[in-house]
Image (cartoon, rainbow over all chains, first blue to last red; front, side):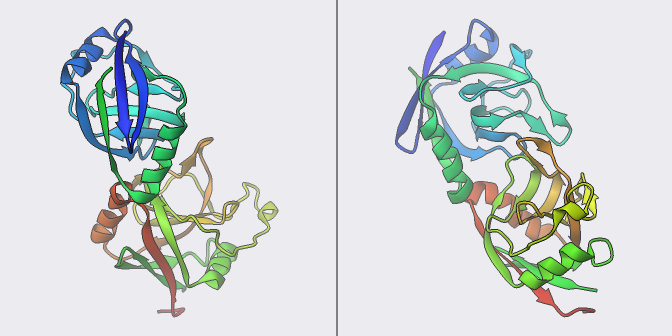
Amino acid sequence: MKPIVVEFDGHTVKGTLLDDLAPEICDRIWKALPLEGPATNTTWSGDMLRLWVKIPEPERAEHVEQLHNPGDILFVPGWNGLRFVYGQARMQGPSGAHPVPVVGRLEGDLSSLAAFGRKIEWEGSRPMRVTKG
Amino acid sequence: MKRVEIELKGVKVRAVLYEDKAPVTVAALWNCLPYEDRVTHAKWSGQMFHTNTELRMDLDLSQWSLGVENPVGFQAPGDIVCLPSAKELAIAYGEARFSWVVGPMYVTAIGRIESDLGEFAKQADRLQWDGAGRFVIRQLASGA
């Protein structure tokens, strides 16, 4: 598995890309690193951050899951960018729930990420950066 | 007919309240006005924003079979809804369905924005990028 580091607001969280389960998508993300862009909360999916970056679209979806856990990193084909789950969340849109590829996991204490999610809800978008670990 | 002026980040629109369909909730809201708060964008409900400071409403929710008066499960752009258990207002500015961690919820359809939504919707959409914004709802004269 490929190690990554996620940086936001002076905090650092380590994680891994699940290239054993989603090899093509993870390869495209890995080659695109470092990625930096604005982060917002999603509007339908609960405690989930959206990092607005561009990743080359994969040929097919891999490791598609319906339910998500805190720490999951998601890639949504077509919508692009990365999503980071920091609490109760489910990838959804106007037409309901969307099973999406789980492409990575964050490790350890996620309280700083959850605080970041709550902060930008009130204070607005902030930059977020993903690098190779 | 009761009407209100709603202001979001300086953009004002006019709305009608559904006195006929939700008389108890509308009367309770009317008595809270003017009401000012900082609203935030929805995280579960789509193109919708909501208040964060409890309205001074004290409704007996047991009088309604679903716990809300004039219950609705879907919203259209411009719909104003109230979740009386949380003493919260929410306004849809696009595709939206009032939801929380438990999923979609019944809310009271309390009114509808009559003005053009264009600039109001742009400001509402910016909430997810800019953070909380100033929101005011004021009485306009009954029958206005």
